[in-house]
Length: 155
Image 1 (cartoon, rainbow, N blue to C red):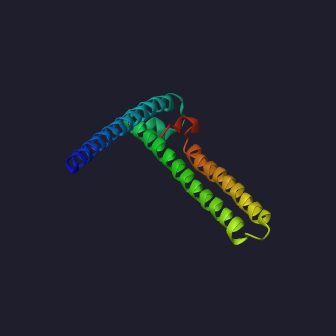
Image 2 (tube, helix red, strand yellow; image 1 turned 90 degrees about the horizontal axis):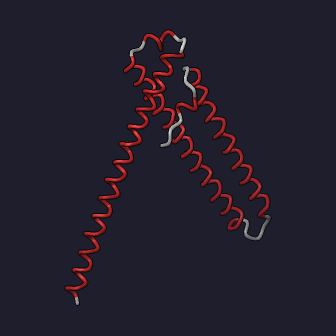
């Protein structure tokens, strides 16, 4: 009996290790593919900028320098957007949990509508702040001469 349970446990552990390893390999392949696609997109956008830009600093760059410049802009733009979204999502989660705790635990016998209204207003404020900060990030890249839609990639 104990021998059977030990063997069963060993089979489960080995199966879990194999599954975990294959998941990590698949994630690594996806990451490499996304990076390759982003590099291709950066090269295409760099070619576009080389043909259409009137800025002297763009014209002075070599193809490799311009491609690296664009790829760096794509990478940093998307990283900033992702960090902003994660931060605002965490803040929204804190507001929701705090509102629910205040409304249903602290004010268990009192007026819940006030706490819910304040929580809703805070949530709307977070949404507006996210939109404002997204616009600031975008305007910084527009000032550098980039088109925002060309910098957006799936990450």
